[in-house]
Length: 139
Image (cartoon, rainbow, N blue to C red; front, side, top):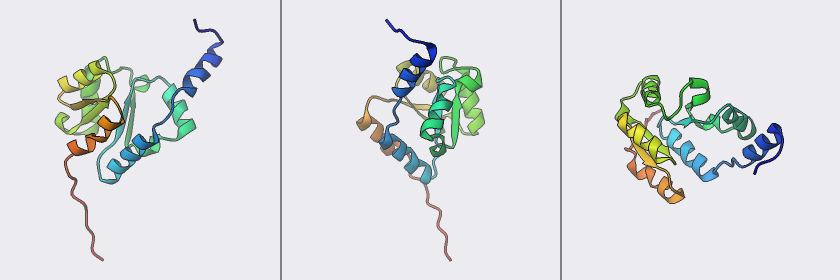
């Protein structure tokens, strides 16, 4: 039932993508605490367009986009590739996704993984994170 040109439909879809400021703020806080933060998206090149509009890549240490990587979250090898790029043990990675099968593939790769349901469940992630030792400097 969709009608319109490719450009019109693309615009309608992209307008439906709205950042959750509370989520970006939490990511900013985690990064400030010393956690490595990343996006893993199966979005196509539209993710780059959305960043041009909303400038959210700056909040993350890494942006992994399947469009640029040549494989998506349905490919279990993607999780191993990212583990290697991050130079972390799989168990050190916490993955949050709103699709259960993606969470299951991440868990199969040894990652900790959480199914995103809502804001409340997302906020509970902080309790799962180990305390980071704060660097102290004396003048």
